[in-house]
Amino acid sequence: MVELREITKENYEAVLALHVSAAQTAFVPTVTEALAQAWVYKDTAYPFAVYADGEPVGFIMLGYYELRDQYTVWKFLIDERYQRRGCGKEALRLAIRWLREKFGVSEVFLGCAHENRIAEKLYASVGFQRTGFETETGFEMRLEII
Image 1 (tube, rainbow, N blue to C red):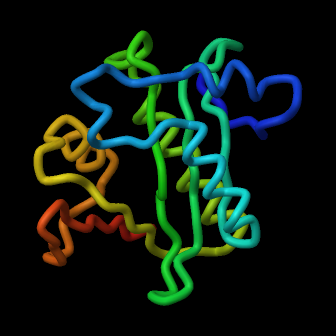
Image 2: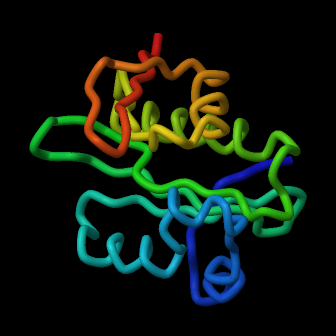
Image 3: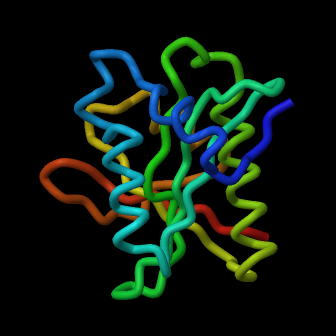
């Protein structure tokens, strides 16, 4: 069973120990970096530990991007030991549900690196679609919540 949990003094060290494979490090910041951003943007950042069957397996940070009036999946990773087990897809679904219940959102955005085909495939499997907005390093995806 996958669930999102608050990061607390009891679990933060286990969450900090989560990491992606060496090939994925160019796409995802460390949990330490993401939590530093969450602290700086504490009014609009919502970090969670991803648990599967009682074990911490990932990290997701949702956020509100004020300049564009958008809710986002800001940071997301599943530890390399737990990838390809469905945890990521379920964590995304739970995060989207949390945003909908907490803020009543009708759409969620995220960014994806051009080279990160695995992440794009995961996001598309949940219903995210490219918006057409691109930069040199990546592109935006949007999920309409019905």
